[in-house]
Image (cartoon, rainbow, N blue to C red; front, side, top):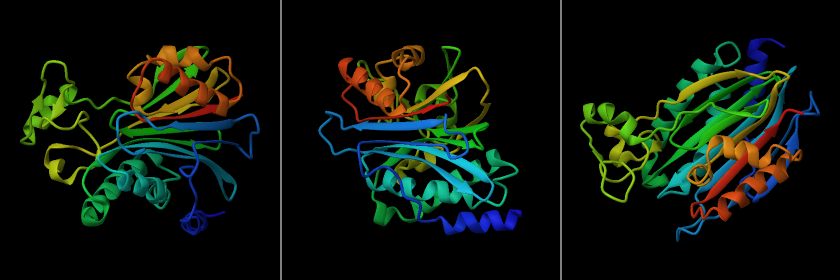
Length: 284
């Protein structure tokens, strides 16, 4: 299959469905049945409707297969993470460079997606969303990108390795101030951009966009015999658990869906009150 044929096949899949309609699910690779995924979502106790959305599925594109995984964690918005769930991967896969230079394609698609969200602000409303995405290419190459504080952690030989970057305001204070914003740090509270947002990068947030970035951090990891599983989770997990604690919590659970559910239940037991979303991808 030529590059043009692959791109056309991608465009035909614009209507691919996601997993946000249910609170749990699972699937497996078609080219390596040992690679499976499972996801689980729990609505938090913060007094607002669920603002997390999950995307998790394998898709065939000619002779290629992609595992597409993402968690979108909205703030003051359900519409924006819902929009991301429906459009971000399509934008990434429609980038002509994707198959040869996926990291470049992902950065460009993140930027274009954010520009579109800002243009549609009247329909999508205020607020924004963080995102962590992982694309598994032919069960071998894993490309992770993120804006915000949802996190990707991989386990190799029992050791946790963080693949994403937590975009915290105090870590990017200089960049925020150079854009004309400020970082507040009141006693008993986390650092916030302009006294409002607890992350320094996000999609949307039109009223604060001059002071925020939607530029993702991108990392590439290759799957080998030491690779056990990948965790994608919203900050409802990471507020109460370290990377290694999360890995240790589910390492012996072979069913990916059960592992995702157990990790969320452990976060709840540790008094997490935020919405909690988790995807586990097991590599056999």
